[in-house]
Image (cartoon, rainbow, N blue to C red):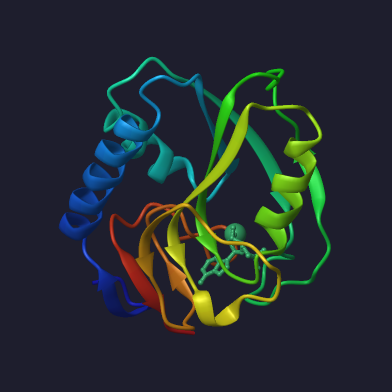
Length: 174
Ligand code: IMP
Ligand code: MG
């Protein structure tokens, strides 16, 4: 185990199985739709790359990047677009793919922004959900795992841009 991981919360195997289940559900739900998965960089890259392989449909992906954090473990409340989408999402059934839903600031902002661009629908898939921490009125349609209020790293999630490559989700030990 990595020296900065206090404990492994979700193993590689558990992630794999859950992502497969979510992919099967999305395949059913989007059967007659025009699916566009939008990955919110950088935390969700591992999740979207596994999730899209578990979806058996014609689909597209695009990326956007937004910052709400200044490298620490507390949300600052400031949202900034670092990279916008390449695609025009009008008429698409958009599925926003996020690593973690915490206060809800990030996803609330992205959802409101994308709604103005006339997609056919917008839903949210998050790998992790810290329900207790929610400050904004937003819920995910697909949730991998509920989390307690602990700062986690791995499988895309960072602490100061490191640890994203860990294959599991672990509690960060400062
Ligand atoms: P929100 O805007 O407060 O919902 O925060 C969402 C963003 O905060 C995520 O996309 C992550 O980048 C970051 N974040 C929140 N909690 C954690 C955590 O436990 N570990 C790593 N990043 C986190
Ligand atoms: Mg982050």
